Image (cartoon, rainbow, N blue to C red; front, side, top):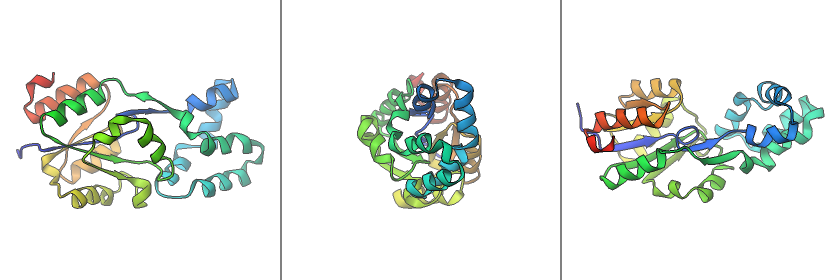
Length: 206
């Protein structure tokens, strides 16, 4: 096996706690109404198009035309997006910093709107620790499209077989694995740390 030189992190759900429920729970004050809104109107699929590069104004307008009775709530998704950010996922930043201290290259590959990513970048100091970041909204591609992984490799001169890719999406993990990445599915920080330690040979991580 090739020696590991780089660790590639997903952001949302791995490093950063992002959840629209932080915004909408108070607004709706009714969990069922909130879930109906998030599953039927401002859906993950709709949000993914902003991650792919669609302007938020365009996405909001599309929904306003279909669901005019929800105009206020729809606009909140754009106007109060920062309120959907929680803190850091416990333990991930510490693992990242330990790996960086050991000399590993630290990279990010995230499905994130180009419009909202600067808000997260200014809020979380850990994002400034990366050697390179690829943001889907800037590339007009989202994971699990193989091309966005290739962009990461090409831009920073990386070899997939020398990288560990950590993500909370099984589809993204499978796509990375097909390209030769070593992969770790994020479920809890203890399991991730053990798997990274095994892949790198850094027993002191555990």
